[in-house]
Length: 491
Image (cartoon, rainbow, N blue to C red):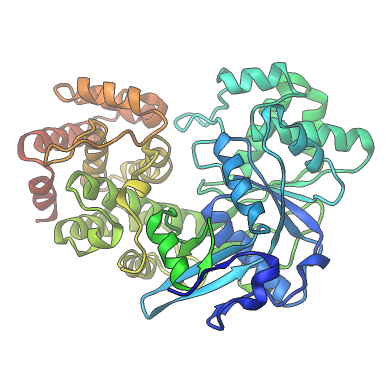
């Protein structure tokens, strides 16, 4: 292999011809957005949309400042600063791979205890949007009740020490307090996580936390800041050795490359209190009907991911594409979606639920995407309440079949036992793994105990119809195993 070209501003003109590089002068960009949680998804999605605007000569004062509040964010900061905050995106199209270097990010705030540097940067008047990708379970909202988790140790700390917060939300509140005091004005809080009503959830977290220490500030934030809902969509695998080798095959030395599928979608409420880039000029959609797009995506794509990743993991299937080639797993996905989920999903302009299911089946089957079942199955304690349980509630309300969704819950319980069908161990894969595993072990002989986790199931534990279906499948899984249970359901 020829010597690799280190990814830096000074080497962009040396990149191979097959690699697209920014055609704009990055030295003339200025910041407008600060993004907290700068992982792969943000760089493949929101940062890419801004990069495309920059290529059109637009949004030069909306460049991205990276930020984080966790220890591994400091490691990401070091990697990205070493390469001038550039990222190589590799599109995994079934017809062939391509590489593109994006330059929409220009800074990364120091990651430190107390988040002083983060607060200082968000308090600067050039920052008009603070966006976040901190995972579905990172908003301190009880998934079953929708209530704010005011007794969480992080929240208690931030309420008692608002000038030295631990959380991203505490830092946002501290910055907004300073902006109000200095007459700078508000910024927009933009959640980019896979949550139904994600903007409303971010608003609830911010206001609930602010009211614990400064109710007057909370009222000001409520009156002046905006929190638009949005739907984000792009399959973005984690970066490992294979992805590093792939970017090197293009001749690039990039310590943090990102691979992604050949599909993106971003639907956003047009509610920005301090201005915004014109993302719609590069393919995003501004809409008052975000909820319908969210429901379609979360119930079918994210819910479908749970159906096949949990069952696939238990059967020792490593990737999502391999799951789609497994007749029994694919049959489980199609039958459950067609009978129990799609009837409660409304169409969006130009797309029916049936057409969307066909689309995601093709996307899941993309063999260029090495997306592991382990990655997709991560954090079931957030993803099951977010992506599966709403479909159960809708189906029960209409007296519809819920057998496949009940089987999904039973499979999740079996997954949390921590062992595959072949006896091999499933390593911890959830922030609440210890308690989930303890409950799963008790529920092996008393399945109803699993449903009594009201922090996930809420009052579904009181539904006799769902309880009976769940207990039936839990028993079959224990007696016959995963494969035979799937085949029994698919018949």
